[in-house]
Length: 385
Image (cartoon, rainbow, N blue to C red):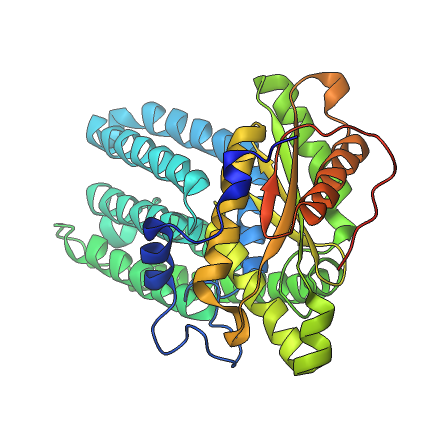
């Protein structure tokens, strides 16, 4: 059987080299030090990003219900407030939903969540200015996005959100024109309540995240470990069956990793694994999840991709490793790909065994390649290092 064109590629394409050059500054490429931080100042590590997406998925029904209730309230109060407030609410809601849609497709979803939070607070500030300023019943609603930010963002992001919220509260209060003196107590109590509740929620969420991260995150690489893999696949399976879209998995391991440990030491081997994990993360979209399932073995879940699409994604990772040289070494990988679309095909164990068998074939064909096509079961294949 002839290798596929994808499997025959052995050096990174110019587009991959340019992309990875932007992701890795010159001083870091080929270095033997620890890899750079994978996240942003809003979500410093992949666990934070995964928690953000998970909470976003789970809270979606509650968010939609809240929007419906608030929208109904602004309609009922239009007699007193006027239709301008409903117009502000409708505009902010539409833009926020668009930002949330972009968030789910972005490799940095926290940026879009942050933008949606600031937009919501700006809308509340404008609503405050239109409905009574420091006397407004809208003012305390600044607490809602502040608590949401405290639950998922890092400290610096929370501080920016708080400063923005305080600014919107002051701006909404100062722009209100009324002969009555401003109710400073309401304004200050709202700001204090926002700080206290968000601080408590943030503390509890970070404590929960630390405990949870220890059970689901591989401590060396920062990738997810195998403990959550089955449950996540079941969730993707249900979504795929409803949407009629495939789910693919890629199983890959590093070629000659034992030789790296023997010749360069286990510390260098650990740096290689960390750098590989970093490369995998920046090569995937936010909803594509990477797991470390063994010593030098990794698995990637790719919802919505068939075998050809998953093979292209695996090839991007393979080329990226050649471009970045983890721990300053030339590191290659061999990968097997499998995908399912229909009910009988979307069984994790079957897909895993199929991808694993193709990984064996990639090893037999000379390593440093991706094998996406079916292989003849034949005799049992034994994997080599």
